[in-house]
Image (cartoon, rainbow, N blue to C red):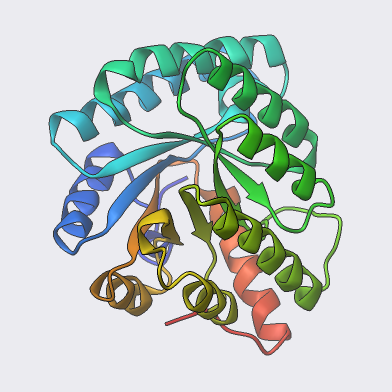
Length: 271
């Protein structure tokens, strides 16, 4: 699908545009994580194409000396129809990007992919790779997944969750998010927080004011622009997730659904 002017709030059309945007954000003190759009591929050739795109992302971030990483969706590598193939393709990406010193994050998807993603991250760490994994507060299993991540030196990015979780109550999810974030703060390990909830952002900042070097706030392109810049000015580490690619409909639909849900709950995102 073509990307309309309205869609460009959320996504960029190609890698060149994403790199240009990343350079701009770097000049403002923000890091970037490039998010290659495209998920649940059903053909091996499409999974192979995704490998090349991820490798190009890491190579160009390195060559242009940009402060950025890459978020990898396992379902874009064929894991939805062949988990062995997906893991093989992911390992090829990690091997290919070793020379670039670029952080690779395993983006968490729907519930059917969670166990597989956690196991894959653990295997990569056992091979000596540094791995970041997104954990979703709305899943019952996340407390155990957090313990496993800390035990195996997996870096955590904590999010609420954008698919279907085990709980839907907004306040309960907030409570779980705070509880998990507290464990991460007490662990003394570097981690990332991905939320646009003003209450949660304020809570984390007030409970970790002396640990700014350990926490990175991750925000999406199209949201919280004032908060991003204010947080950088206040000394916090901030990264912006920058999605790009033509296969943008599923991603944009999730963003719009998220904002509609907040509106129905009389909630808002940070400015």
